[in-house]
Length: 270
Image 1 (cartoon, rainbow, N blue to C red):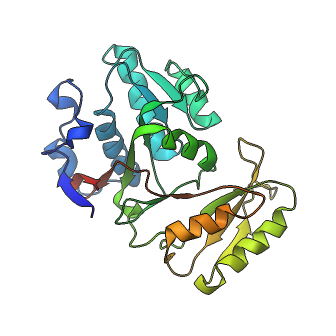
Image 2: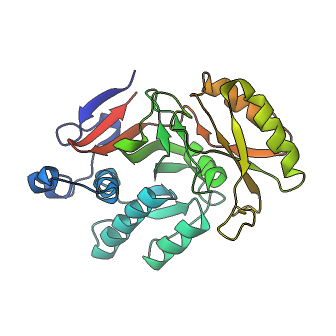
Image 3: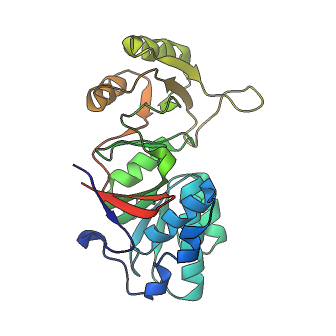
């Protein structure tokens, strides 16, 4: 069962922060007493705490999305200042690759670094078992490949991402599908979760054309009226459909979740 501990007081033994100054990881009283913290403020707090666990010489999985972008920015500044050295990043999307390269972060791929020390990424939903919904940014396939290859996977979120059950936010749970006969799979996915009141929609760009992933696939977004009852069973059923490339249920992968909220930053571990 997930147990929450105050990040400013405790740090999991398997995620011991590096030897940088305590001031780098301490939350200021001023920051916590600010009347209103924006969602970006909370994401940055969580991202900064996650980067404290990075040590020189690590191979890092670099996530994709608004929260992960704060992590990459912080890593870039620490590498530039010399506080982190011999870091290699494995990006999970073209966007992250471009951001990291612009910041001078050395990059590689799973082909050359099949074993990753630590991956840090955001999430769209986090349930009490620390299972996740990810991929609303469209990078779910590469994210899952990199994070499954990581010895430790740390998730950074603000408290709005916490749900009692996956699919419970009412927002999209993405499924990446091949372009060939995409509607055939959209209908099958909708029928698969008919009892959950599932609605399936092809993801579109602002111009009305289908969104295309970095892997040249389409995304079918599933919207649930009620949380998924058995996420592991649902994941297996989705993956068994021919033409499905990957789904946004990230199950059994998480080492720890760093959560920023109005009361500060906490860490949840299994």
